[in-house]
Length: 106
Image (cartoon, rainbow, N blue to C red; front, side, top):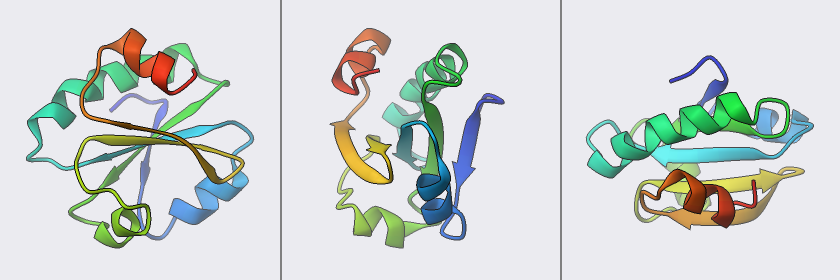
């Protein structure tokens, strides 16, 4: 995880989304998920390259399943872009960097 990537928990999830001045892309992932491991370095690159324009955050679904359930996350990885605290875009599955950026409108 890069220095520009934030780790979310049940305790800070709502406040991070509410207080963010920029869109937040939340990566719903788990340690055992192979595709999650494939997309992680791509998200780290985006976090570094887009710092100040978008924030990348990660939420471990095994540790915080109630948040995943709240947003209907049924498969991982799922990336949800929140703008002004509201769901804006949703992308499921590992994608190439350019495709991921395009689908998330980054």
